[in-house]
Amino acid sequence: MKIAREYTNVLARCTKHTRWERAVHLFDLALHRSSSPNLSLSGVVQCIAACQRGRQWERALQIFEDAKNTGLQPDTYACTALIGACSRGRQWEASLQLLCDMQHGKITP
Image: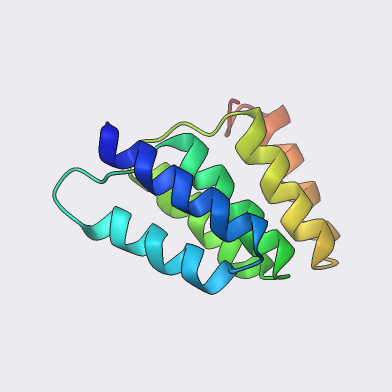
């Protein structure tokens, strides 16, 4: 868990300094580092937020899906961050789809 916290701290700094490329690289490292990924949900949110700042909505969507595939259950913060990334990328359809998925229980924050 300590490693996941360290990743989250570095991801937060990447977000603050608009370094989405580095955030995505660290996310990928954490995801593929071992048989049990060193990810926390707050790290996922930080990475999505970095993608939002970099206008990388497609990558934010992929990060969200990758996190779900590792067994992390998205919370309200993760969903809000993804909606923000899609909104910033002018992808209202993707934002609306996420809201519909949440409403129909496909995603339960």
